[in-house]
Length: 107
Image 1: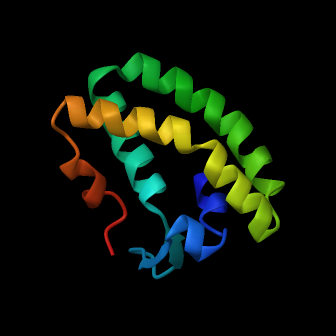
Image 2: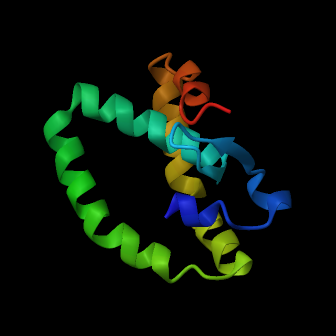
């Protein structure tokens, strides 16, 4: 869903284009980086919880993302994830792991 949200207006999402190892170029936001860093931390320290949450997301996320077909819906999706992103960032900050954010989806 965050990947679809990155298709929103750049003035809001601040997406930057990143070339992945397979050659694809995709927009990546700070939101995506923060949530990926938090997911990585969760998978390391609470693997069972991570698997459960990931399983739910893997069932719902692609369906939700398929419905995000315009920049305005992408903006809305981005904004709806702001509270989750803030909680993820706060958790990373409290654990001294905010440097992990910049390591996710390097450009």
